[in-house]
Each structure stands twice: as C-alpha cells, then as structure tokens.
Amino acid sequence: MRTVRLLLLALGATAATYGGWLLLPQLGATLPWLIAGPLLHDVLVAPLVGLVGLVLGRLVTDRPRRAWITAGLLASATLLLIAVPLLWRPPSAPPNPGLPDRNYPLGLAAGLTVVWAVVAVALVVGTVGRRVRDRRVSRP
Amino acid sequence: MNLEPRVPTPEDFPGPSHSPLVAARLGLWLGVAFGLCFVTGLLSHFIQHPPGWFTWPTRPVNLYRVTQGVHVLSGIAAVPLLLGKLWSVYPRLFVRPPLRQPIRLTAHVLERVSVLVLVCAAFFELVTGLFNVAQSYPWGFFFPTAHYAVAWLVVGALLLHVAVKLPVARAALRTPLRRQQDGGEAATTGRDGRDSSERRVFLRTSAGVAGVAVLATAGVTVPWLRRVSPLAWRSASGPQGVPINRTAAAARIAVPPDWRLEIIWPGGRGTLSLAELTALPQRTAELPIACVEGWSASASWTGVPVVQLLRRLGAPTDRPVRITSLETDGLYAASTLPAAHAGDPLTLLALRINGEELSPDHGYPCRLIAPSRPGVLQTKWVARLEVLR
Image (cartoon, each protein chain N blue to C red):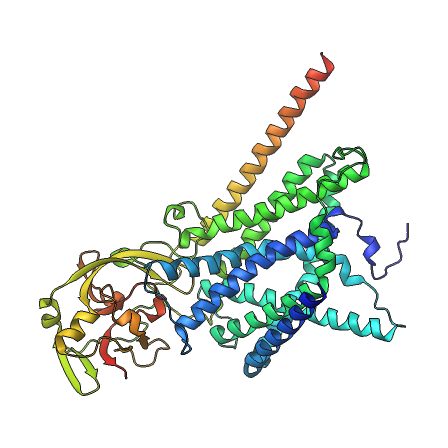
C-alpha cells in the first residue's frame, strides 16, 4: 500500500502542478471563481443545511417521513442549482436567437412538481401502510 | 448546554451522515463521476487540439455524441454527490491543527491545502461547465482553456487526496453499512441500528438525487428522454428540425452571388459553383450534430462526400484537410479534418438537411458534416478546402 500511496502522491503532485502551470496566464481572472465555491459552501450553504436539518428534526419526528421530505428538499435544491444558468443570463452572454430555445421556468416548475408529487405519494403510502400494520397488531 | 458562541469542533456534529463509512462511499462515487468527466473531457480536448500521436476513430458515427454526453451528464451527477460528500466531511473543517508538533502540523497544513485546491477546482469545474452548457459566460476568462487547466488541478488534487486517505477509505469501504451485532444478526434497534439505517438513507438519497438530476437533463442528448427532461438546456427542434448554435446573422455571413467553392492542394487548385456541386453524385447519411455542450441531434444530410470531390479533382485523399468558412472573425471559422475523417465516405459537404436545401443558419450554401466529431468543428458556410501536406 505504501508504494501505491507514494505513486498516487507523485502522480497527483505532477498533474496538479501541470494544471496550475496551464492556469497561470488566467489565474487573476479565475481566482475569484475558484475561491467562491468553498467560501460560499462553508460559510453559507453548509450552516444553512444544518439549520434546516435541525428545524426539520424538530418539526417531523417520524424518521421515514423525515427521510422523504429531506430527499424532496435535496432534489429541489439540486434542480434549482442546475437551473440557475438557464434562468439567469448575465449580459455578457452572447446575443444569439438560436440559443435559449426552451421555457426554463416552466421546466423547473414541472420538475419541482414531479419531485414533490412523488414525495407526497411516498408519505401517503407510508402512512397508510403503517395504519394497516398497526391495526393488524392491535387486532390479532 | 453551552450557549456561548464559539467555533464548533468535529464533536459538535454527531449525525451518522458524518461517518467515514458514508464519506468514503460518496468519495468513491464522486471519483467515478469526476474520472468519467476527466477522461471524456480529455478526449474532447484532443479531438479539438490533436497532438501528433492522437487519432480519433470515425466510427461509430455517434462516438463523440456518446463521450460528450457522458461528460456533461457525469458532471450533472457530480453536483449533488459533491454537496453530499462535503456535508459528510463538513465537521473535519473544524479539526484543530496540532500546533505543538511541527511535523504533524506540516502534514496537516499540506493536507488542508490539497483539499482546498480540490474543493476550489471541483466547484469551479461544475459551475463553469453548467454556465457553458447554457452558453453564458459571466466571467473574464476564456472558458475552454480555464476549464481544461482546472481539470488537471482536480485530478491532481484528487490523486493526492486519495493517497492521503487511502487507509481510512479502504477500512471504511470494507466495513459493511449494515452493522452486524454479536449474534451475526443485523442490528435494527438501538443507537447502532438507527445510525446504520440513517447512513444508508443518506447514501440512498444522494444517489437518488444524482439520478433525478441526470434524468432532469439527459434529454439534451438521449432521444427517448427528450420529453421527460424538464431542464434539458436545448430542445431537439429548430429550423429544419435541428437546433442552431450560431446563426448566419450572428456570424455576419453574406454569401457572395458569385460564390464558388475553392479547393486547393499541393500542386493544384480547382473551383466549383453551387450548381456544379449539386450536379455531382450525392450521398445521404444520417449523422448527428454533437456539440461540446452535450446536446446532440441527428439529421439526414445530403451532399457530396469530401473524398469523392477530392478524387474527382485529382487531389490526394489521404491527408488532413483544412476547411475555411465565409465567417471571418469567429473562433471556429476554420477547422482541420484529420486524414481519417477526410478519407471517410460519410464525411460530406452537405447541401441539404432533412430533404430541404440548407437554410442560411444551417450553413448555406454548403457545410461540413463528418461522423464522430464535435459540432464546433462541423464548419458551416464553407468557402475553401485546403489539402494539407
């Protein structure tokens, strides 16, 4: 394992150095975009996720139900993130009538609707299933 | 309860999703996603800037469509996986450095730096890639070179990270997620059982959300998902049935009335009018336009095979051919057909698309369409073919 790790170390350092060297001419322009990701995540996104998790834990105590709602929230957040460049086109985007050729707000709304419809069905099925099981237990 | 504000420590995050069992598995999946992105991205880079040793096959005709589709879709899948992985290891951000032990401190700082580079570069690739598929560039750098350079940073930092974490990751991957009790039965109750179940739920959710993200976008390139994917960034339709990236107006194309296709080779030259091109034997082929942005669409193209044209004029057919457009200032006003593509009978100078004469936006009077090639290299509004030495 020691050899493998040393090999990975050497390969990794070489590849990263090559990447850094390639990036050098554009380092000034890319630096803000490089730093922004971890900064936004560590200072804003992760604490927010933690907070939402804490609140959700207080509001919904049933574990399976909470798992479905969490999945719905995470899927929604991912769809929103993917949709950002489609919904928000800063003026530097080239004007070209052939480019944005779909109704993206409608697409996003449709995607979110499907996600939450699935979550709702899962919650209902889970609740009904549990009631049926409870009834069987109480009336043997 | 201590309510005084302070910087948290890793112990403040007792959630089961922060276990190495989860982080190692998410790391493995993320490694696969980024690995696919890197390999397919490298291929796309080499196709556009071929080093001497590189050759790219012309068959199957959909090859580039598939590799570039894999590139963008594995990038999409990596978005929720990266966020899940970072959430899983978030407590590690608050590990206090071993200040009094210089050697361990150095190792700690080096590892932190490599992880910072990895996270910076990973976010950068996903964010710039997402903006590029929407053809939006809200920054001051040149996307293709920056995206390529940072890809090497990701891979380098990823290999360093694996080198550092290998023992922990191996142990974690070998530990089954379903915690066994002493009797050999899977624990289902108690704290252990609950934690193990929450870990599995977290992983299942991460994988599920990655699947949702892929399904929501895969319609850009997978024909039978066209109607399913609400966030596919391009539709499959456009003028004459195929979407367009660059219109004739955007490229400021004005076809001169006396337009003639010019063909040059070492020791010879010939020209052909549109009527003469139309009079030559035509071939119809079903070929995809497959863009670097991942979207792709097939069409039926009719035109003169480049190899037949060269043969008819007596030009060599076993060499690369430079294709120049009427476009004067665009980044993709010219492209070079490698010898393999120039000699392929399916490489056409297309005059018609889906049975109709090419519209100006599709490259009237004629455009290049070759199998297994990025859309940006399928030069439109062709003015000149030059057989290279």
